[in-house]
Structure formats: C-alpha cells, structure tokens
Length: 328
Image 1 (cartoon, rainbow, N blue to C red):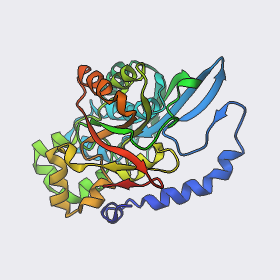
Image 2 (image 1 turned 45 degrees about the vertical axis):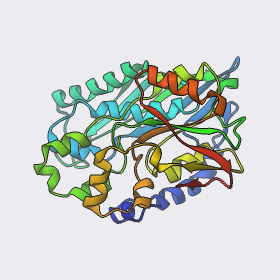
Image 3 (image 1 turned 90 degrees about the vertical axis):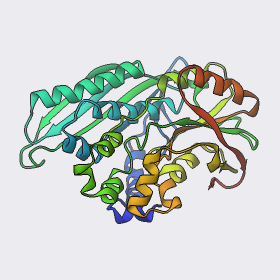
C-alpha cells in the first residue's frame, strides 16, 4: 500500500478488510448464472446461449472537489463513465448501457445538466446508451455547493471470449495504453500535495481536471485479432494492486519503467507531496491507464491496431514465473 496515500486520509487496507467482511453476505446472494467471485474488474452473469453480462460500478471521487473549485462541471461525467466502462471492457465485454446517480444538498438544474452532458459525452465515446439514472436532493447531508456522482455500466461478451488469463504464460508481453493523466484516482493525495496552490494555479487545476481516457473502442478493436490474454485497468492502488488481479497463478509482471515517459504532472505531484517512487506507483497510473497481457507473437499486431485507433501504446514489460507480484 501507499504510505503517502494513507497519510492523505485514504487507507486501502480498510477497503480490503471491508471486502473480507462482506464476502459471506455476497455469497448468500449467489444465484445460477453468477460466474467467478468478487475481486475482478467486472461482475459476470451468464444469461445463456453462450452470452455473459459484465457489470461495473464506480464514482469520480474527490476529483469532484477540484471541479467544484474550478466551476467546471462538464467533464466529470466523462470520468464517471470511463471508470465503469474501462472496468467492463477489461473482461472483453462491449458496454451496452450506463446509469448515473447524482446527489447534492439542493438540485441546481443547470449544474445537473452540465454534469449529465459530460456523462452523455462519455457514453457516446464508449458506444453505449445512457439508459437512465437518479437525481437525489439531500439537504443536511451534503454541504451547500457539494455534490457526488457515481454510476454503473453493463456490457456483454461471449462466454468463450472472456478475458480471464487463459493461455497466459511466461514470455507473454505487457502492453501499456497511455493515460491522459491521473484519471480519477489519487485525488486526496493530490489535494494534500498541492494545497492552496490549486486555488491559484489555473493551469495546474485544468491539467488535473483532464477527463479519464476511455479505452473501449481501441480495446474492442484489438480483441478480434486474438492474442490478448487479460487486461488490467490501472485505477486506485496503481500498479501494485491492479496488475496482479489479471495475472494467472504462478506468474509475475516485470515492468520496465524506462519503456515510457510519464506525463509531467506525476513528477509535479511527487515533488510537491514528497512522494517516493514506490508510493507513486502504488497510488497512480503513472501514465499507463490500461495494461494488456499479449502473446509475444501478437504484440506487433496489437500495437499497430492500437496506434491506428489513435491510442498511444508501448511494450512496458513481460510476464515471468513468480507468485503474482509486480516487479519494478
């Protein structure tokens, strides 16, 4: 875990403990059709005829504090969609629809419309429908001017097409897809690192509000050609938490940090917050928002396809024998 993130108020070990305590409750809801167990990037449900639904839920987090500070509400909806659909596509599913949840002390129609406009932008980019949602007015619960935004996405794939690590072996290649910045993770640490500078540095604030990149279309374009074994969406917990979730048993991910150049904003965060390299990689995506495990003989084709779609991609390492670790 990241000591710096914990010092900023986010202790991921509490989340792990909460999940452990929830497992028994989740298990007693299990019905025919549920595939796998809790802990994947998406929940999977077999609907028959060889088809599987994939579902993911997420929010925007304290990045909303920056949007409120800047008075810029038209892009956080993209973040909300991206965080969900990027999880769904990790298992190889095509997103079908999205629903959002907006809550505040008092409904401001123009603000809500701006936020939902961003949600719609994200849905268009992901190729899914905004099917509906909920707007909640909760005076006395939220402070005036604050709001929260969350949502969930549902996608579909073939049962035989699920990206679950099958065929993964030592010698496979790790392909990284470039991020647009911190995406929607680590903002409690970012706010602690920069402090009052966020209120005076418009360029920094604007850079930090860059929306999360949506990987659905480039991802789906490479899956048709085969060779992709698994995918990891690099969100909260950075490399150390997310990459092991896609590894098959008995394998490690060996990362070559010199294979790409992280956006300058990550260096600014590290310097301003005095955050060491381990904690940066344990909190942020460091310029790589999605990682694919690809058969070595398919790597060039996958890279060419991603680049043809306008996605910056690069080989960032390989898979080696091990016990599920990330080797930096």
